Image 1 (spheres, rainbow, N blue to C red):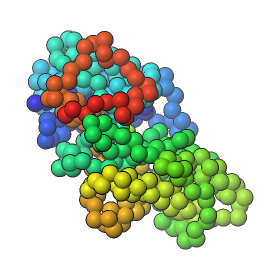
Image 2: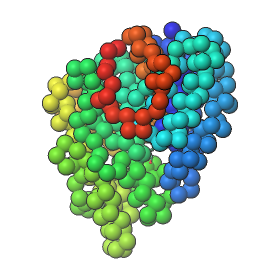
Image 3: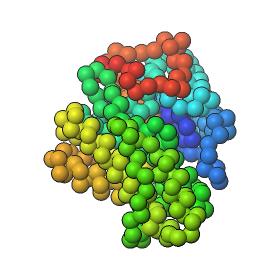
Length: 324
Ligand code: AMP
Ligand code: MG
């Protein structure tokens, strides 16, 4: 069976075409702004403009036509309303015109589900991106969020810090590079609050330290990463201890970070748990993960009536019954 998936919850429009075992195409386009902020309406216009060319590119790459597709899947939420509506509209149009079933997919769940294409069975997922930071795992028939950010996503915290100190956007890779040169650990507010996370205090203090002129940027970047990532690893480890699961996966755009991977590798080795990070194109926001999750849902008997395809900006991870 073949599924086509459209992702467009935030700044990336992605179209993926997959079978149960293989990614046939996975193409994207991301709107970038100099300031790094994201304007929902501009992002939605970007998605609308690129829908047709990206769809064509994906079909060419997969060497199939729309008629060959068994199910159309789309990111139903959580995300920015205007972006979600463009994506849902395109998915509905394809489903109606070509008489195909349609399935709405939860974006956060799809980030974790795609790891199952690589033999992962039942992991604890650390999902870290610009806007999202969640530790999630299946408990019974639902993904439960064991910990999440109470304010901003870790990627956002890195990007905002980078912008405030004049490094430009996106900040994550630049901070990672600087952090490698850092030698001195500077104490910053720790981000764990119970099982949840909060990065705004850390961000404010790191900016304040920079502006004081007393510290080297390399040392602040290094300390920022060490402090923020230790918090992420701690919450992940506690979820592993609680659920007794044997696998941890790292997904989302921030999964590119080598120091975060290293820290998770050490934690999982200590615990004798498998650790997996998918290829970066499947970590970041992408259509293949939506297609893959939609395909599994469809095979389990789930399809949506058109009136059920309404978007859900606040779509919660635990709203979905996982019967696939
Ligand atoms: P996403 O929101 O999933 O599209 O991912 C984008 C986020 O990933 C941005 O906040 C980037 O700063 C962040 N990011 C990308 N590469 C890295 C990296 N090497 N280290 C940390 N964060 C990164
Ligand atoms: Mg994402």
